[in-house]
Length: 165
Ligand code: COA
Image 1 (tube, rainbow, N blue to C red):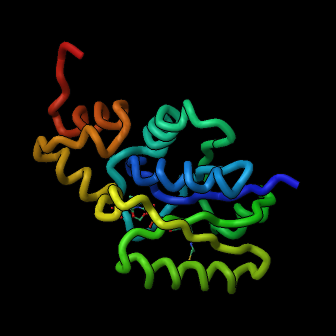
Image 2: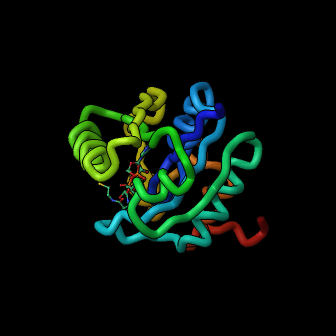
């Protein structure tokens, strides 16, 4: 039986830290469905379509990964896709409380779906989409934290695009 995991998130935008978790996850799962979901407490910079495009481009070289979008409860989506687990990345200790709360709520909503946590690579422990967006907004160098396409999109959003590129 093939093992499937859902990797949910806002991905606003996808970063190398997310890609690191997906690559680690593929050592455990046969297939990972990367799903853009809504976190109601977040206002996003990129539209769902832009986020889908950036995910698709960043994951183009990685086999056994699918990109999807779902508006609703994560556990309902996981059941619908017959997933074996929800995959989440854990960075610093500061992630723990929020992740623990979310995993317990998801378990309460559906006892059959497990959450699996993987440690992010050390390089990405202190990165997040927001901190990368903030650096990009003020013209900071973010090239080694996101894929080339995401880097270009961020520069375009904040008016740092190279017109000759
Ligand atoms: N490396 C670097 N950064 C990472 C990372 C990694 N490995 N993993 C997460 N992050 C960052 C993200 O970039 C994001 O940064 P930001 O806050 O600056 O945007 C932050 O950590 C957490 O983001 P993410 O993992 O994408 O979670 P989220 O809070 O955006 O997403 C949902 C949460 C969408 C999964 C959750 O709200 C959800 O399940 N929604 C659906 C509705 C539902 O079922 N709710 C009930 C659940 S209790």
